[in-house]
Image (cartoon, rainbow, N blue to C red; front, side, top):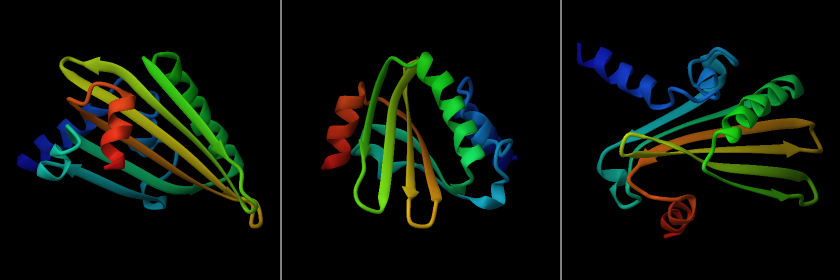
Length: 145
């Protein structure tokens, strides 16, 4: 019973986000993803209550499909920051979004693509976070420390 309750609460966390399709395993099979979920004291210093990440290797078509989901979420975001680094072998693109709050809980979505140009491979990391931290700027500052 407790397991069902925890599962339903974590499924609700990303609800309303297009990228939730990825977290639910509807875009890429779960067995191809490395998933991390964190709750509790570990997150308190960041003013977060929930952290969930997925890391996976994707094809060009899958990367495009994920970008489309992210674009749809970005249209609804409160704040968005992107950056691109293009060193010799790697091309890294990062997008950080602050999504509309769910009640008193602030929600954040981060997406990073790392292309290995030498081997034509793409690794994607998607992170969903929620808590009391009030802005992307504040979250970035807390994560630096």
